[in-house]
Figure 1 (cartoon, rainbow, N blue to C red):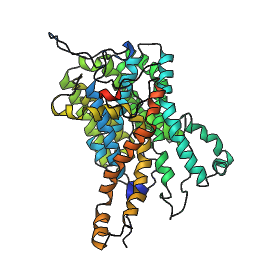
Figure 2 (figure 1 turned 90 degrees about the vertical axis):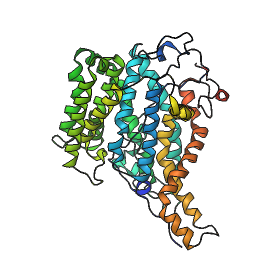
Figure 3 (figure 1 turned 90 degrees about the horizontal axis):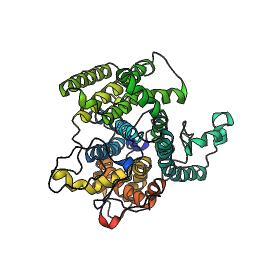
Figure 4 (figure 1 turned 30 degrees about the horizontal axis):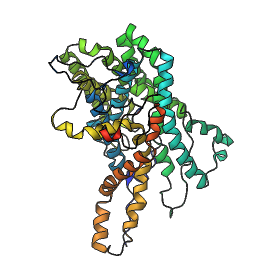
Length: 431
C-alpha cells in the first residue's frame, strides 16, 4: 500500500528560519458596540460628515484585513513551503509594522502601564500552549537536564516568559509514532516571534522618543544594523545572534508603524514614499539574487533582503492606507472571519504549526480505510499537501474554540468561544 509522502513543511526541521507570525491585539468589537475606550480609539480615522453618521468601530479595518491576510499566508507558507510567498507578501514585516502602530497609539498613556498590559495579553496564551507542548515532551521521554551541559531546566523559563530561546529536543519519539520525530522543532518554531515582540514592546517607549527627535536616523538604524549583523560582517553566535538579527531585520518596520500612527507618512508626498520604497525593494531583490539560500528566493534566509523588501513593501501599504471603519464592497462578506482571526490571532499563530503536523497522522489513517484501492491511494498521495491545507482549518477552528478564550481572560474580557463579531457572540466585559 502506498505510504504517505513526507511533506517538506510538516517534517523538515528549520531551526534558524525566521517564519511569520502575529502579535497580541486589542479586541475587535462587535457591530453593536456603541462605545470604545479612549485608549483604544484610533486617532487617524477619517470620516466624512453626514446627516446620520455611523458609530465608530474603534478599529481600522484595513489594518485588520492586512493582519488576516498575513495569518493565512503564514499557514499556506508552512504547508506548501513556496519561497515566492515571502516576496509576494512579507507577512512578518507587515505584522511588526501593525504592532508598532498599535504600540505608538497606546503610548499616549503611561508607558509602564502599556508595557504591562501588552505582556499580560501575551503570556496566558503562551502558557496554555507551553503546558500542552511540555506535557507531550515529558511524556515522550525528554529530559532537559541532558541539554546545555545539564542546565537545560533553566531554559524552561522561556516557555513561561519568552526572553530567550526555549529548549526542545531535535528528535523525539519513534518513526512509528503518531507525529514525525522533529515535531518539537516545528511546534516551538513560532516562539521566536514572541521573544522578538516582547523585546520590541519593552523598547517601544525609547524607540518612539528617539523617532520624534531624529526620525530618519531612528527609522534607518535597524536597516544599517542588519547590514552589519545580517550579512556576516559581524557574527554574533548562538541565540543571542538570532535575537539581535530579528530585532534588526524587523526594527525598521516596527518604527515605520509608529511613523504611520504619528501621521508622519501622510506629510510626505506619495510619489516620494513610493519612489524610495521601490528603490529599497529593488535593492532587496538585487541583494537576494546574489545571496540565495538553500530554498532559493526565500527571504527568510536572507536577512538584508528581507529587511529592505519588507520596509519598502510596508511603506507602500501604509502610504495608501484608506483607514476603513467598515469593510467595503465584497470584502464585507469576509467581515466575520476577519474579526475572528484578529480576535484569535495569537491562538492561531501559536498552534498552527503543531496542527499542521497533526494533519499527517490523520491523513495517513485514510490509507487504511477499506475502500482505498491503488487508484485512490495514488490520488491521495498526489494531492497530500493540498489535503493538509484543507484539513488544518477545521483543526484551527477546534483550537480556537478549545483554548482561544484564554486570550479573552488575558485581556480581562468575558470568555467567548467564537468571537466573530456576531450578536450571538456578545460583547465581553472589561475588568
